[in-house]
Length: 362
Image 1 (tube, rainbow, N blue to C red):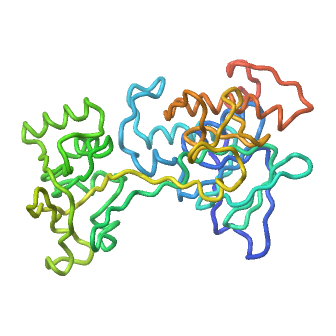
Image 2: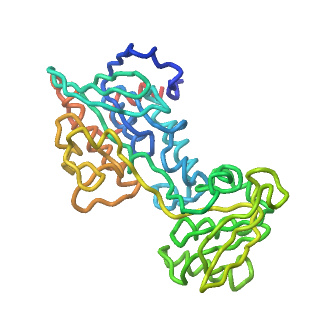
Image 3: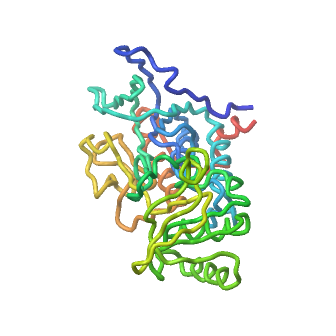
């Protein structure tokens, strides 16, 4: 049986001042869905890959933001959670033995005289590869934190920006603040688990899908959750409420000049995410906003041998969908193999005809 991918982390980094050099066919920056599928597509063309990710686990947004949330537009899966999708993609990529370097950020880049690329990292690793694929999504994503006094004392204990374990909300008084898809989707999903769920938003209108809004209003009418107009002004808990540090008792909100408290043991804040490309934005590549402009026929950036796929790329008609990232990974790999192995003849083949894939599958 093939390996399912080795993992290296910062504990493997060399001592300060000593750079460990790793040569590989392809370096993929980002271990989200597009990056994982790129491992498979490159592997079918005989190219090995190392994968970097700043997070402590693979999966990108699927793992970090919505592991338990159902996704409905993945071909062949009428319904699949983010975590389950990543597990399937990891298994598929594992056919080609990728090496994952987690908690590792790409820093500098230079093009060598032989046309290959050298990429340095914050763990002291230096990668040299003819193909570099940026699959970093919107960059390093951080939740937008509202200016709530004392918020930091509750984060990770009773205040969260994502749902990683829905059981921590079972039987709790839960407040969800926000008016977008994440807020409404999780309100609908968690209402059956919570003792009482309150959706808090500053206005009657929402930025979420109409169907989610309709479902939410039905549940409010049926008494399955509450909707309250208002904005958070503070938190009550810890010693002031006779509780342990970081334990929440209530959310202090205001609307129309009136201030009121909502009982809350857990608070989910969904005010969006801020993406930062960080050092990659300084690589001198053509960009559109915080995304890299690519040729949609090859997904090559303005620098030969550097590619961008998934939410990291920009081109006319681009859709920020996981399935779009799969398509982009396939076209990228078809072009990248000619750059990595220019001396070899390459023809398009269906997966059912690839001897290498048949050998890997046994």
